[in-house]
Length: 187
Image (cartoon, rainbow, N blue to C red; front, top):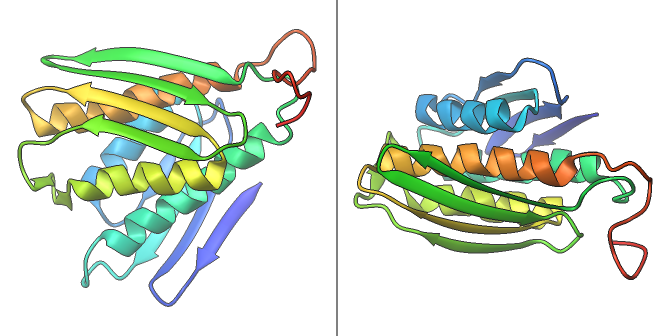
């Protein structure tokens, strides 16, 4: 399924087709690199094309990408039948380490324990990385717990996106039966 968002600030199209190649162009090269890392390590086949008011700043584009990627993930989860629901990943990258846990149980929430040394990573203000994951989590209806550290801000950021991809892949893995992993029977 394709998801679109058109506002006075952005025009974005997103598709996720697991097992296919990615095509990503947000107009923000470092963000494209991070989204590609997420897609490759999650085996998600992310198609994301974005036009945004980048001359103002990157906030609207990154936020709206989070919203639409979240919507697409919610579409993959559907009613939760047949998925594992929980996923986790501990991924190193040189001196950096990210530990991420995901719950695709219908409640959007972000726990963020990551710090950057500088105000920007690549050309992106570092607080926008957290904001991307907040927007994604609330729109996907998933809980994401992120703990990351390191000395190099590029490595910290990249390992977060890689670990999130792996944790999400694990949580969306198909089970042998088609039940919903909840004592309630629904998400």
